[in-house]
Length: 238
Image (spheres, one colour):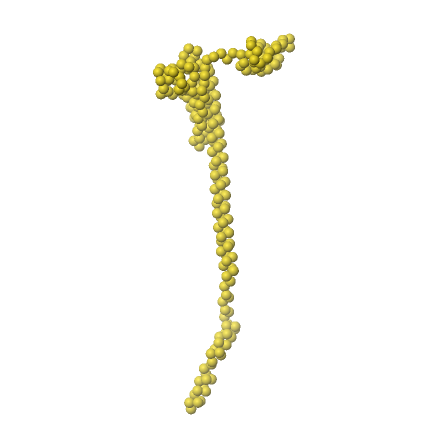
């Protein structure tokens, strides 16, 4: 009896090897096994992300570099406009001082003791006129203007005394303003007095009906025509 029961259990209970075979068959005939992961695909993804990050960083640096170059170029252009305005103001101030020079008091009317009260003469064309003002000499698109001031020079003996101009020399300070708040300041020392005399330039040279160009002491003769001749050498006494 016991022998039959053991035989029956042996028939009903399959061996471990048979169970593995059944599982293997089930895997083959039923669900597929999950494919093993490929480590090379992960490495390729990491390399691609690193390359993409590098390209993004390089693009950002390029944009910053271009923006910086444009900003520098624009600032240089604005600074050039301010310098041009300052030089224009100085030229206008020079012409004004030439016209207002007094042979007895010189430029005392425009200076003060120790330069405590610096003047910006309104008689100078365009002096202090803002962009858009009718008195401004620049095109409105330039956004440029200047302010010209007259100061006594520091070596004047009367600078800290009466403040008068006693040596016929003053300082012309011109401040030019450009777009975006750019500023340029130039100062010219102007000396008056003396006799321009021979050697000054004349309108033209050696053309019929016009004065010759006096390049020496024998300059600015009368008008030249076909019947008149003049001989001179630069440096000759009149």
